[in-house]
Length: 125
Image (cartoon, rainbow, N blue to C red; front, top):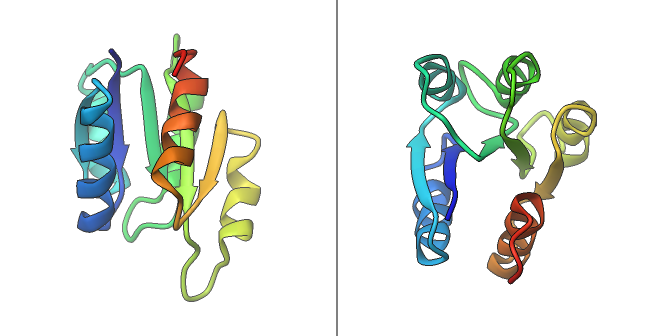
């Protein structure tokens, strides 16, 4: 159905979200931080949706959002975050709300994630 780029530094989150999206018929490419995600985007890989964590070491989700903002025909973007030791999820989303198409706080329910993905991709579930 759709090509999804999933960027999250937590392997367990990537594994769970990737499996869920694949069962829904999507193709998923994983990146373990914003830098790896940016490399894929800059390398010419095409995606219909980018799901990015906002708080990651090295390169964070804001860097990804700023790059995507400059793309011609940019994919839809879902920002996710559970906050961190110094920053709450709400604070992380304050930055994302103007740049992403949607936000979802961790931990999220699988049904909520799929509903948000379907809405962004305009899929009738």
